[in-house]
Image (cartoon, rainbow, N blue to C red):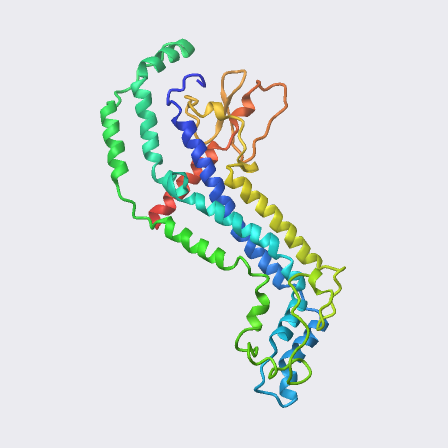
Length: 357
């Protein structure tokens, strides 16, 4: 049956586009979840005792010295926060890579390669495949007779023109599902805003409300008194804190929890880049050449393997392809165990959820 190609190249083309679209969508969701999980774990990293002391000094010493209305010197505030958040700032490089990869993948959601378009047009693709089979019925019939012998006569089938009319009518139906484009635009805007999240954390405290600002350098609290703060502002990251005048940071002992999250960022970024190129280990399939034709034996939700007695035993499909090395199986049986059925289930779930929206 694999040589009949009675539905043309439409099933293979539909499978390829749908697989790439779902790979991108799934990896995008996983990337967002990974980013949220990393933020959660990093926020649980405890602050050091020295940082606790310096932050208390930063906030309350001016009050104790009778300078309740005196704001903090800009660089003084930043040096304290940069020293306390040195490990967190080291996430910046890989965090930016993750955000950029998410934005790239999000760009694949629009147009003919997007999930919304593919799911919305799947019925027309099925109609086109049936029409192709009907228009080439003589060729298919000859191949079928040659391979399987004379089949039993079936009932009357609709004419090709009727199929075309039904397909066109379905295509003209307006979907009531909200456009995914606006949702994607909102997510992309949010991702762009948090691209410098880790290195901007000190600014959450050292803002206009707490620091003196330009023009008031001689009238700000420098940690000791109301006067100019002389040391320069340190850079972001652990290595830049070697000469921090406010926080004694041991740059040879990075926080291991944060280092683990940096590795997770690298792994997720690599996964997103593979998804952008249409590659995903969970969707690898060695049976591309069989997607152009059906099995013809009525097995849709599982894979049928003919036994020696002629009966069909059912082998349920899995997400990952598994190859059985038993000598009793015929060569090539494992090629039928692929992710196409899983893809059909996902499409059905999306259509079901779209109806509820």
